[in-house]
Amino acid sequence: MTRGREEAPGAERRSSGVEGDEGAGGGLPRLESGIPRLDYILKGGFLQSGTYALMGPPGSGKTIFGNQLCFEHVRRSPGSRCVYVTLLVESHSKMIRHLSGMKFFDAAAIPDRVYYISGYPALRDQGLSGLLDLLRRTLRERRGTDVLVIDGLESVEQRAPSALAFREFVHEIQGLSSFSACTTFVLSSLREQTHAENALVDGVIELTDQLIGPRAVRELTVHKFRGSDYLRGKHEVEIDTSGMVIHPRIEIQFDSPRESATEERQRMRFGIETFDAMIEGGVLSGSATALLGAPGTGKTLLGLSFLVEGAGRGEEGVYFGFYEPPPRLCEKARQVGIDLETHVRKGTIRLIWQPPLEHRMDSLAEQLIELLRQDPKPRRRLFIDGIEGFRAASVYPDRMPRFLSAFTNQLRMLDVTTLVSEELDLFTPLIKMPNAELGNVVENVILLRYVELRSQIHRLLSVLKMRESLYDRSIREFVITGRGIEVASSFRSAEQILSGQARVAAGLDGEEEQ
Image (cartoon, rainbow, N blue to C red; front, side):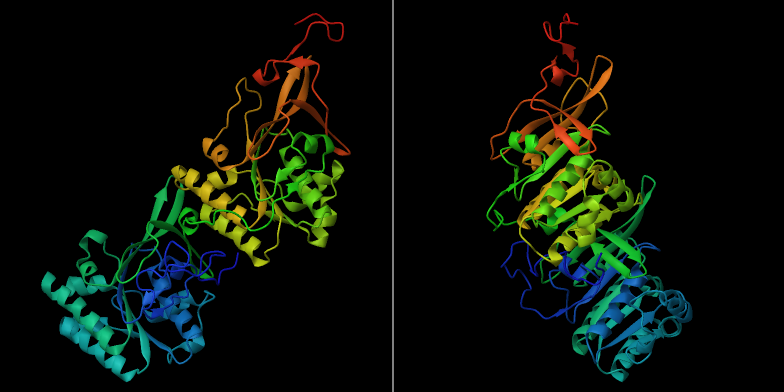
């Protein structure tokens, strides 16, 4: 995944939820944070000379946020300077030692362009007025400073003789920012309801770090942002050696898709002659198809056949899976006569495997959409092997309907024809979508299932749904051989197949009805 992007994955730069709408604050000068996708959430970045509060518990990433903003700012803006003021937090030497492993950290920028100073001695000895004098003197001496970070504001509130004195201090900080043309960030560990400064500052951002079940989840929420629109709600936060990366919710990133894709729609074949005939020559390009089936019914092989057929026609494909690593997938395809490996070597099919780790749902979707946007081409094919992987990565299961709707709509806009596999129970007398949200957002539904007859297991295939197209509603038996998937012209020897209770019909094969 590309870490250095400031916008949402592949999204055009826009300042409101609707493309072409400049939105509130569209003409005001901005200070870009350089923190991936935060500027997209803020519709362009922080307003210059504003004062912003960043709050959160210990470990939520406040110090990384402040330092990453400073180093990214001086990197992107030659001649700029930042001042980082600490108040009863970790020592500068320890802070720099911890930051040295981060990719954004640049020791050469210290102390000329990123200047660290402790404000606690002045606060302790001279009170709030002494700290203000130190800030004014530092900004005056270090001309050209356009970012000021004050880390540990709770120390100021604890030292303030009254709530009014603390509010006056914040008000003075605002005036200092405006007078010095300096954008100021105050970092605090206090909880939201005790933040007296929130009513005074221009924006309030909260970082959280909580356990949801066994998972530790970091999130960012913008509670207030004067002078501009912004993306509301919670957004995933990831911290690694790249620093902090924000993952805006997919359903709010792509809340205003175009009505249709721009490419002329065509039939996309699976390369299985009998099955392609059942669906009038293939699914329509730009559509989404659900492959439902129990484990082992052939969902993965059908998806790989779809990709290989497209690659043979010059249509690029992507496999995005959670269960089988690429070498095993190529071996599996080779055993049934599907030449996946050749197309992987040529680059016409890309295999992306997500190992069984704790993923983030929005991060997974961003990774895939970014990949597809890197080199836009018409009529590409995508096979997502296991929508359960996205569901398992979701911290909030009730997001799935909105997420899937926005995600599949975005894939359609990229003229990507998508197959998504979904697991069913091994044997069930009832047929229903295991997850209604998937059935609602796809155009086509294909069912693969087992049926037991005469002490043997048979595989059956049927098309349950195809929007915008005619299709054959009959049930077909299919087999998996060394030549791939072979679909029969019919399943004449059994009745009541969809009930899951197959029986031999009277008069067939000389047998009596069972």
